[in-house]
Image (cartoon, rainbow, N blue to C red; front, side, top):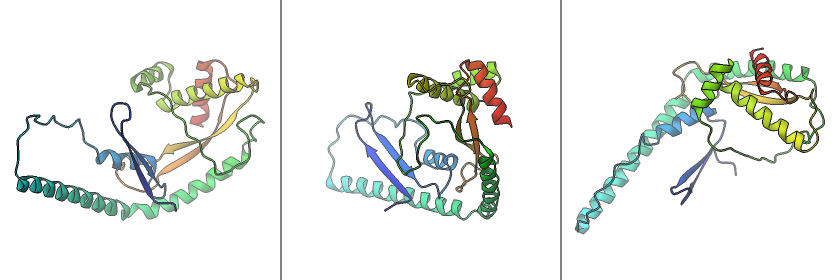
Length: 229
């Protein structure tokens, strides 16, 4: 009842269509799965077809249908061969050993962190999941802010997210100027030019978000200091 992958095709979404992909983490991390999915997509919009109607014969129609069927089968076989090739990469054995060591270190650091304060975000663990997303954020603007403020793209986004948590707690009357909230931040551990290889090559940083800092510049400096540690 828990397939390794699910695909849902949504029609008439914002004057187009959307493909919702849900892939199990046992196959690969987010960096590799995004790379694989992008390799299946076209690099640009399709070329416009000739709109003039040309009457055809049944044989021509059958030939076109067969050509499309064969073409799709070739694409599927190509993707399957690629998947098996990536899965059988010899680096995966070393990855498992490295992941085990990293997990032990991460759990040790987590045990030394102080507990979260009692807020709306603290509660019992369960299997309930909730996802949320924002409107697209221009990457060039985020990079420019990072260049001016001396931080990475990740630092800027973490600062913005921490500010959003701060405003949420202020709206509920739970904010304090010395409050911090723990967050698990995934970190890409892949060597260069290995984005197309399946497997999990991520680390996890347990970071205390300085929600109590109201000044965005001060919050960015403190977040960067904690991430660099």
